[in-house]
Image (cartoon, rainbow over all chains, first blue to last red):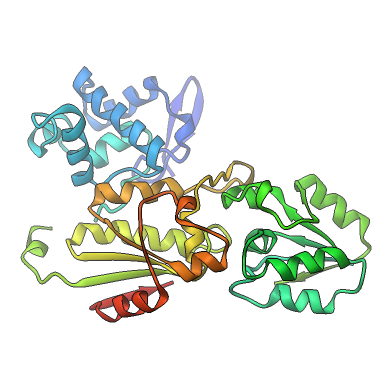
Length: 111
Length: 100
Length: 126
């Protein structure tokens, strides 16, 4: 089992780096996970991460990538709700990578 | 004797078997999917209302809340207990029987 | 996934017969349904017997220490899973009405539900 260290405290994660307890997430930890992933967080990245956290809080799942893309398009417009924009922000997959940074489990329906 | 029933009365006959074996004055605690037997307006409600006159019937509150059932919908005569109440019931009765 | 899109679309039905939380079936079927959405099939969800309890409004599992997965049924629409059917007789036996349910559904009689099941290519029941 992997873990992150935050303020001298161990935060447990699964073998792929997804947090085991969503409640242990905070923005500093997100920055640390992003750094490990090689993602330099900008306001555009945060917009997606925050969207994912809102989605999770409402539906209790991390969305599959195409569901995320569609939902972002609906909320933020077509220039953001497309694969090209989201993969530029999160090269290893907007759902998988952004969910990890957002402290969510790996997306359900991600095959 | 304290009887616990954890199966839905619509799916299994655990409750029915419990009710037909329990003696007058026994306590019955409905837990897990057994809590559905405490609901009013169902096909099993009349049976439960009748049982509540012969036995002390309780339902576990946290299991009720998890299933979205509010206290206002229960059959008359059924009491709600929390986990502490569950422990108290077990302590009060020298024996208990789980109808799985 | 692209190669799947050119494939034949089959009528799938997931039949839910179990209440939530007491057993793992309801959650497992829900996860299977979400995964099935990736395969662009014609997915139908049926709620019969104690399965109708899965859609009860107002579920609160805080005291239970289990995850409340009922909000996830509201996400199905975003996964393009819109064909939800609930059996009228099952609701009536359990003292429920359509107003008790947390998502919009089509209410079918037991006879109509049976006929719909009969039209499917694949039926999975739990």
